[in-house]
Length: 413
Ligand code: PMP
Ligand code: GLN
Image (tube, rainbow, N blue to C red; front, side, top):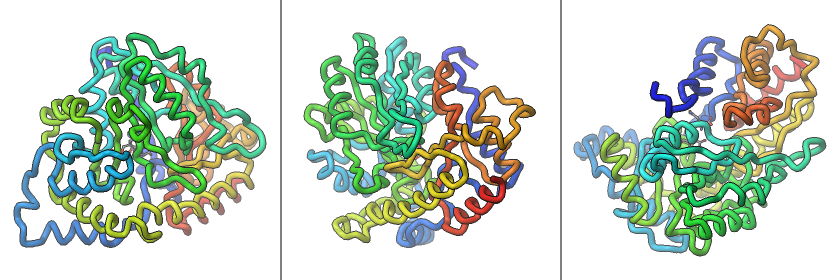
């Protein structure tokens, strides 16, 4: 493996999805995906398209995005960022948000460019930066308090430390709001600080907003591209998998000014070229369906958070009652919980892994049949210890499965 890839050969997803296949846990709260159906209009659209009269909808489509989809995305986002987004030059459809991130990073980061990454971070950022020849510079979110009730808003950056990372070699900062795995929704003040530093040092912002529709009131997701002077330096990433609860459709997108999108097109046209046509058509039709009711509470982009909030609360209760200290997320569908008060209940001495959270999650899965994810995977090597006291639970699951998880955890405890 080329040395520049760093430690990319080990993937928490490969390892824990394999564990799920081997252990067959009673409840899988690991990898983030819903265990129930997407809205009916979404899945119905796909079945109609695949078997419908228009044979061309099963053939290649425009490389940078199926025209109806980029047009719907422009309608969706233009009012949200306060700018008319050109569907053909300022939006690209990609193979999941993953490929949007990949094309943005490979398209912009050059040899020895520095990229600021906020920890914990979605693990592929590190690999992609290194694959491009860049140098990740990490800064961790830390909880202001760790006892009593902790919410994702308590996890903050040290402003001086952040400022200190920006220099003449900085090409990009990667922001992830709403945040996986903490559930933090960056506040206006926090985003303005990042925006001011980007403008001062002429730095690009790659904003991963795949959980954009899952902010729980009163938290409100703010798109950094909508802040003054930020459109021209921001590439924003979204995911149909997250927006419509169809993670298996692996379709995402990026939007931003044409001058920046050009570089994503170069990567995309040479490694993917075009994405799946029937899926893009189905997402376009689904998007139109939601746009027609965008002001109604029934719009899925509003209903989703409403549907998830009681699930979050149910899991938070279970965790509190059983000795975990959960960080209550303001968004997304993950909860990180401190497990250290349970250390005396679980014997980790025979677990061969290097990091305590890997040991804990594996033993916990064996003893409770509930599978989770070790958050140290979301930290750089020197900072892995910051994630070791935590475990990540996914709660976009049927209520009956959350109740089963609750029962199993209680019995174990
Ligand atoms: N970014 C974050 C923060 C994620 O959690 C995920 C996982 N869905 C992705 C990007 C990748 O999304 P996709 O499944 O659309 O590739
Ligand atoms: N984003 C999802 C998660 O964090 C899935 C990650 C993946 O499949 N690689 O669980």
